[in-house]
Length: 135
Image (tube, rainbow, N blue to C red; front, side, top):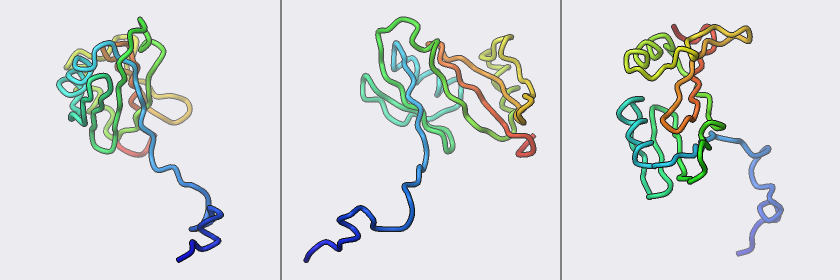
């Protein structure tokens, strides 16, 4: 059986490629410690740990980590995570002591409420709620 011309030309299906999701990859000095922080403090679940590469999940979010010896690599890395009920999440993380005073919750002029948490490697996790979607 031969392949239809349309499939051979890469035209099988309709439309352009559709991006289904992104998975941030954050640099960490110690993979086990990073996973423990995300699981024990931020409420993620272990996805996998392959030694120098691993990941965690929470709801629809997945974050991967790669081990690096580069000092302070995390201070230049981060991701934005869209959430609902941001004020409840903020209160929970404040009680756990992971929100720095400089990273307080704030309404932004572009229509979001945001706050940032930094993991032990300095990676910034900015939690974002679009106005009108939750609390």
